[in-house]
Image (cartoon, rainbow over all chains, first blue to last red; front, side):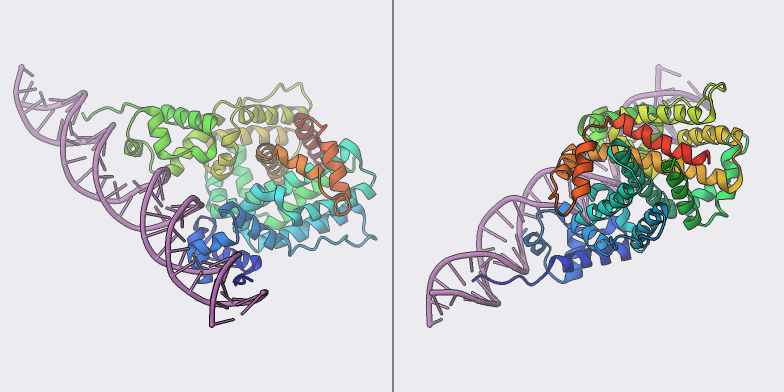
Length: 204
Length: 204
DNA sequence: CTTGGTAGGCGTACGCCGTACACCTACCAA
DNA sequence: TTGGTAGGTGTACGGCGTACGCCTACCAAG
């Protein structure tokens, strides 16, 4: 009987994502998203309880694009995990400003739960269970989220790595040398190199 | 000749830390820190350029307490790394609200650079160099920062793990089961279990 | 002991933010 | 045609970071 809604949750999320992609995390505000949609600020509150809920919406919107289907069962289990991680990284790499939001909203994201479920399926198939499986999943999530954040917060200070290479070598000889090496390592190679280390450790 | 300063950087940092410990990250503001010190808000700007610099100050203040001395050389290298990581975790565990700040300010923290330098010393002694050393350091930092954040952001939703255990088992059979297991795993055991996995992977 | 210059500290104000609240009105069912 | 429901809006409030200009405590020089 009442007046019908004129916006969908996906439209809200897409507008918020547009703001994030264009102007970065600091520019995300209720007013900015409302302007993006051409409605008044307060109109948003007919769709979300508060800003937090809008953030969850955009996280869900982005992560929903991650394929959480089981990877090719012919692959060894470590490569299957790598496929799953790569899908996640590719998606978030396209929207770096969303990465910090995934940290704070991870508990409430169905998409992330589905992803974790698939990871657990692979781990279980590889013989993991009980505490060992808990630790495997948590360490994977810890590594992936930590590495993605370093990658994207580090990007805003890509100057950061440069600054490290320029440290006083008398105080930080190894950091200076390692910083110089680091500049020659492709970020993707670094990310998956670290993941490979973790997976090797998981395999005993 | 001019009027002398009446506050030290350490006093600023300590006041900010008091606010963080008592009221959490969201309560950290220039006004709150000024009130904590009994001075006007604008007085702080005689000591820091902006809020960002105050955050760096508190990160430095906290991390300065981490012992970055080389661990007992008699220990195997992996245990030496573990000692260094444990020192970092103990310090940040006492001030969980600071953890997110360490992510954003890590590039500018001398204390963190000193810690990294010591980690590199151990790695170098264990035969790491070049790209392999870069990846070892970055993956350690990624794991540690990711795991600490999960631990402390997860704490605010300790309800989060409970919610996971209560997921519809038909959609998330493994997550539900793993969530139940997870509740019985001590966080410290989980953290160092994951670290051990990573270190095992590093050792080939 | 006086005095002048330097820089510390403060009050005010501006433009953001999230959001509570009251109002108007477009819409659909009856 | 009309009434009720709920969508959309405008205003306002208290918080935030911080630019700016003033007052004044302090120390050095005389």
